[in-house]
Picture 1 (cartoon, rainbow, N blue to C red):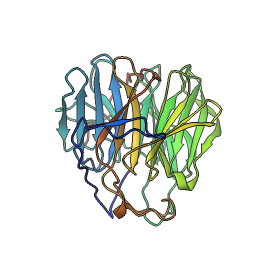
Picture 2 (picture 1 turned 30 degrees about the vertical axis):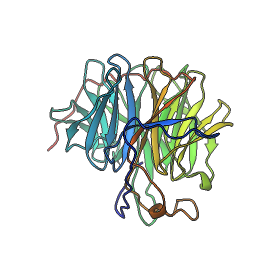
Picture 3 (picture 1 turned 180 degrees about the vertical axis):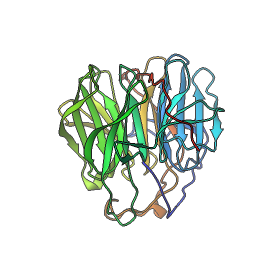
Picture 4 (picture 1 turned 90 degrees about the vertical axis):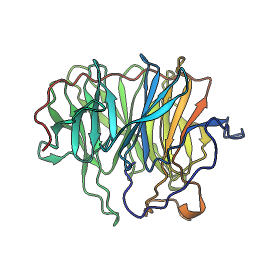
Length: 329
């Protein structure tokens, strides 16, 4: 979720490692790290190094959490990391409000594209497919609620960028089904999670259909992930919860989180049964919020959380984008 202006900041008083009391809709969520992320987002598990990465988009900070010793740290400041994929061979593909980049922490970002097919690349979340391509959607924040058209883009391994779909309002989370036959995509303003048929040969996305419509009272669909059973998980901005949907789009469970602005999630840990959850401390008061939503009366978020489950996730794919078209000015 992209956050802009009208900031109301919440602070957490829990110490790292504190467990939140279990309940019927909350099986026990542990606070891992609290850096007061203005817009904590994009948690991604590196299964080879047993490390979790996440970003604070608005704060322009990038973080790492080591599973082995539970040490966490900011590893870069000053470059906006919106979405990111781990590159095969090292580094990241990064998507942000200025475009699509190749980047390694401590190095100079290299711009792949700031526009594609005449469309501005103001990007949000991203995901890699099994062939190493990257998908990412654009989004334009508009306080008036009149959102300009946005698009879903595909970055091929040669660095070329193509429009994969149009008719998008505000792009957000992406997730592949375990067999990769389906790509799920959250359009936050539309309050919809869509499903596409994914084609391995050319990366084309076809047959878009509504997978889930999120009621206004449940907040906005933000980050997505899928587990090994093919169920789709969604983080609800303004909703303070995670939801799990079966492959037919039926709600299977709802888990309450400590933060009203729960932004994203991913599976990690040695057995891929730990859910890492990001949240955001900076609130922009949108007309899209649930009726009666008052962020100044809520704990909106900022920390990274962890939930241990008996459900296994799946490994995310690594990008293999190799060609940069030009360097940033």
